Image (cartoon, rainbow, N blue to C red; front, top):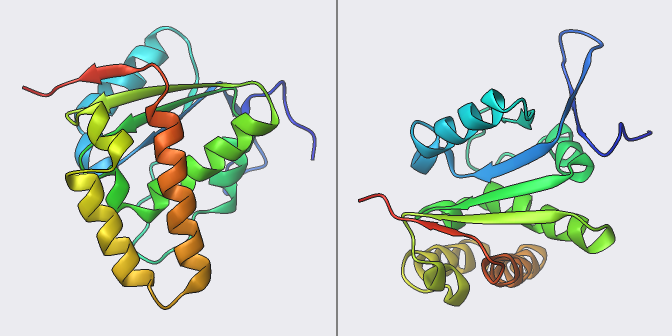
Length: 171
């Protein structure tokens, strides 16, 4: 399938329309959906920057939709909003791993935002990030493939958290 000028492609299941976007935002909905990311998406929209916003609510154990993975793969810019519960979401971590795969295959920008979490906590995987990974390791300890994924998630967190970004504390 051909890419549309490196923009995100989202398939609308109710029609044959294809929408294109320039930015993909990875965020933990329970932490930021009703505050920071709403403002972020509003600002992008006001500046006529079309951003993919995933409004679906998957439950634990459900896999990421293929359309979401295609949206990541076709995007030009990634904004990753690290928050207190970001690492507790396997979905967020899968998105981040897919984003890292994409930036390795072609030159794209990742813009990390540290929302109400210290950047060093993300880099070092301490505090709530350490707790989240301990829970993932306990949950997946008998599943070799998932334990490999956990290691990839740790590595991708370090890689993206080491990029220059914005530290936004919610005080």
